[in-house]
Image 1 (spheres, rainbow, N blue to C red):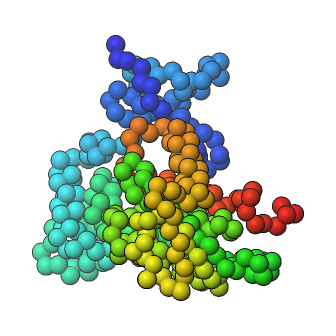
Image 2: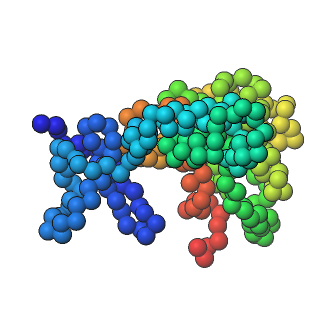
Image 3: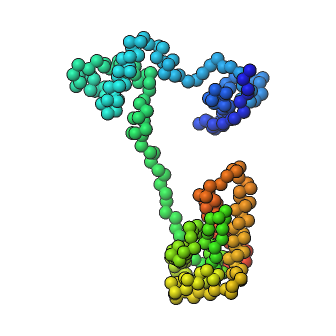
Length: 297
């Protein structure tokens, strides 16, 4: 006796009703269509054998014709492929207009071939175009509040590097604005760190902020001459910048919380990078409790 399959898939039809399909031991997913109203959860119970099938195979369709008619249909399909897979309308016009000399294929052969074998797979894959994408409206950039321009236009940036499963990230946070950024980096080289820092600086400059001070560890000393007139402040050996250290701890806490809510057992590097980016972005969504914000919120 065959074992009862347990893997299920749910599909919602155009009316919004949910249809449950259960995997059969032969590998197909089946849907129980019993009309017995006294049965409850008919989709949860599958009989070991079935006497109906909502799928027509080529073998079943070929049995509706003689061997000669099936061979004629195969010849028509072979000619269609050899002609470079034209459109069905053009293919039929070539046959009806006798454009091919001594051609054994007739219009009936073409129609029979399409009935048995359907549309050519190569034609479907090669000629199907993507649907027209939805129009994406341009969103208006939110204006920086006047009190921020008046009192917090000069930005003090705190930066540091942290690791998630041996993946390096450069993290920055503005001291008063509490705006966070994160970049995955491949090395601690001067060019790599400088490139990431320039990307961060461009974010603030694009909104007319002035990047006035940078607080960092000793490993960022190499950036001092390259970021002028921004002033670099390096903490003593063995010390850390508290704002960015606390922000890193928050990001790691959010990452662990998200991972424990996911069903996966293994996480590739690209997924971990996306997770860190998402956590940093979500922290920027909500104004920080101790940062500057509209006190009416």
